[in-house]
Image 1 (cartoon, rainbow, N blue to C red):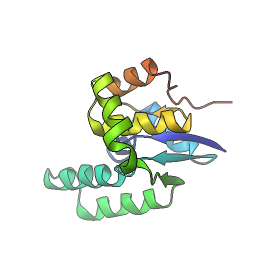
Image 2: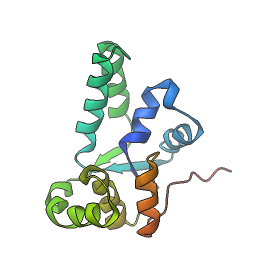
Image 3: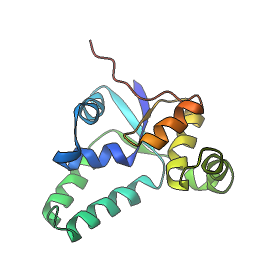
Image 4: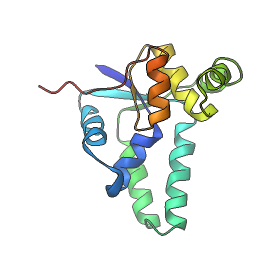
Length: 141
């Protein structure tokens, strides 16, 4: 089974049609044969994206709830060690690569698991490549 680290930029693009695209769609489709791993902060970030979208009237409460239900049905595993690493490894990566601590949590997880990172965030993608982490690319046959 293929495993990769999934960030919120990709997850959010599944919800907002105008932010989607080929890459986000291919990542979502890859969950048919693989699994994603996310840091423990991912559910909070996704919840925040949705509540802000509701407040800005980009979606209804029902649409947000339905999206959450769909996410819960996907093979996404939440890493339990995110908080334990936040004040050391994640903090150091944030400083070293000029990232937010939130983005550094995705980088730290990908490094720890030796897994590719699925992101649409340019700064995070650049940091990942500098750190020797591959970016997720779906193998299309």
